[in-house]
Image (cartoon, rainbow, N blue to C red; front, side):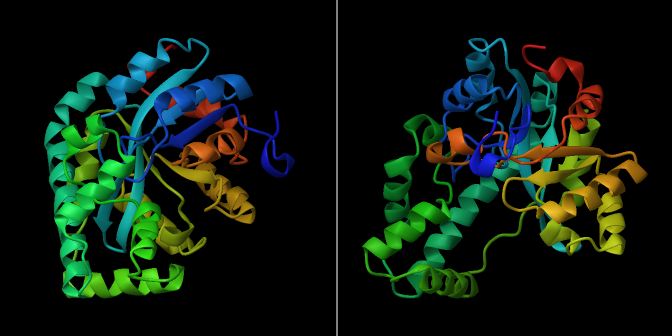
Amino acid sequence: MTGQNDVPRASYDLHLHTCWSYDATNTVEELLETASEVGVRRIAITDHHLVDGIPEAIEAAANYPDILLVPGVELNVTTSVGSVHVLALGLTLRAIDALEPVWDEYRQWQIDLGSATSAGVCALGFDYSDAQRQELLESYRPARTISVQGATPTSNKMRRAFFIERGFVSDEDEYRELMSAAGEAVPRPPYPNGDRVLPAVKEQGALLVIAHPPAYFGGADRNRMDMLREELLLDGVECAHRRKVPHELTPIYRAWCEEHDLISTGGSDLHWPEDVSEGIGLHIGAEEWWPEIEARLPSEALINA
């Protein structure tokens, strides 16, 4: 089945967000229902930093026996080249329990980032207090997510609209300038260190895949790619992404994966319901990649297998 610009949908999509990400509003039900309708048969839930939504996803997946669910998470980590996003795919329930110290660290990091962002904007003379941030969170995040995760940061999309509505800025450019100045006024906490987080996750059997890699790989700088492969303990590369991997880089990344016995994955990185029907599975990842991925995922992590 085809989607935007007649690009064929892949049968898998291994980078999807739900409302358990602080910057997304998709429900897992919307993702599963749409995947079932359009023929995407394998999906990974990879919410930002935390796995609070995995039990909900597993419960919902029971109503979609035609969909294979891969529990995962997207972790932002501090590395030698700055922050990098890494997908951890194939988290078993046992692994999730064992990694509770990692989730605790990210939970606190999210709260600290939200507070620092509010303080930075307030330092510039704008009314974006913790109370205002909480109001914004409650306008789009379900109460159950706030009750578990607390006062997280807000999504750029919602915060930008909030600032424009209140006259803090008039457009996207002014918004970026304000956020940059706010970060200088009150520095934001760094992401947890990859040297500590990634070995713990890998030890639990999850596959580590660098997400939307062009910014991290310097396009296709082989020295940088090789360095990050070792530093991040990579099992694979998101060689196809709906928007952040140019099509001409996909075969280059795929060849490098084959050279180093890494898996190649593809994902649409969806956050918002309006994008789901026209975005899920649209990442140009090849069908022959899926058997290679499945062979390496922990079998006990695959729901509906």
